[in-house]
Image (spheres, rainbow, N blue to C red):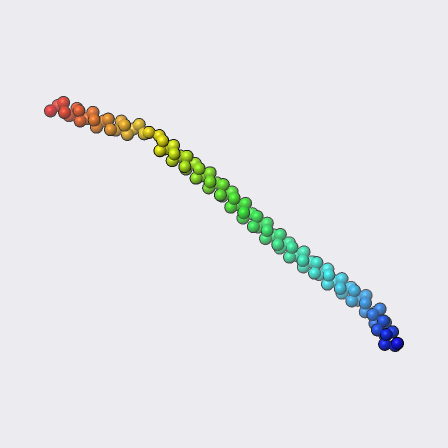
Length: 101
């Protein structure tokens, strides 16, 4: 029985120290997990910022392309009057020279 009593005696003296050590280990693990979680959150926030900029630039690009297409359609539908005047000037000049000969 003396071995059992010695074992119980050592448990009574060492148990509080081991319990405190175990608590400290748990606190340390929780601290490390918290730091890892903060690092992950920072990475996600950085990715979100990048995604926001990509979306903004994509919207600006779509608007610019839409404006370009609208301008090209406008220019293709518009009949330039100055070309008609240019062609009629040559016709008038030919008739003018024919009369003099």
